[in-house]
Length: 54
Image 1 (tube, rainbow, N blue to C red):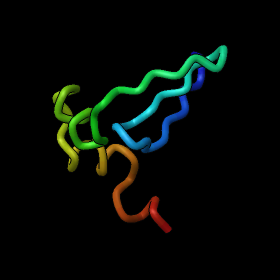
Image 2: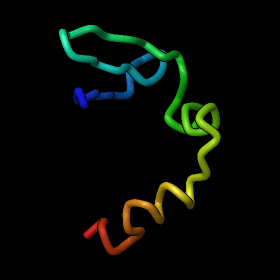
Image 3: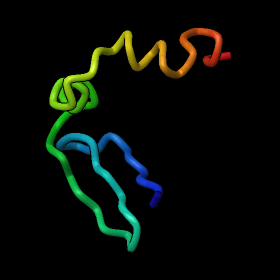
């Protein structure tokens, strides 16, 4: 699967796709999660919660 990088831009999260194609979503990270209908706690738990942060 191709890797997608992202960073917070002035007008929302910017995705950098293969081939250096950039997409400015115009959405914050929280808004993207809402659009994907993901719950923050579910994502947090998926990545191992606090154990993985250290």
